[in-house]
Image (cartoon, rainbow, N blue to C red; front, side):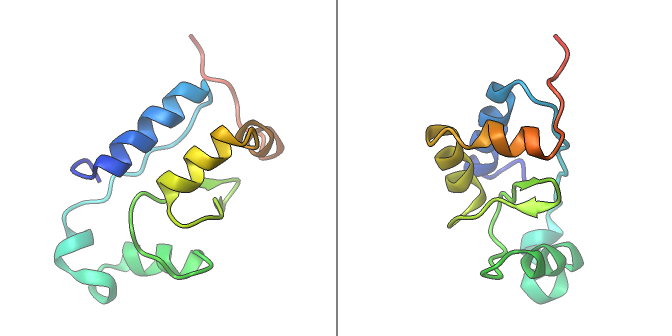
Length: 97
């Protein structure tokens, strides 16, 4: 969600990895319709272990990053040195320069 500072920061972190990724922009309905009205929000919440529907959501190889939130989990994986291994295991490709 473009207005979310956590989403913006997560994109910056993803850019810094040098790996390709797919960005899926969620519209205003994410907030205006709430958890039960937004189909995308409902589906994403069902895919996360704790059912959280906060943004951003970070998935690698179809699995959400474990942790409290997408941004925090991403930052922790980078700081802990585990992100690159997860990306390689998922078959992620380096972005072309």
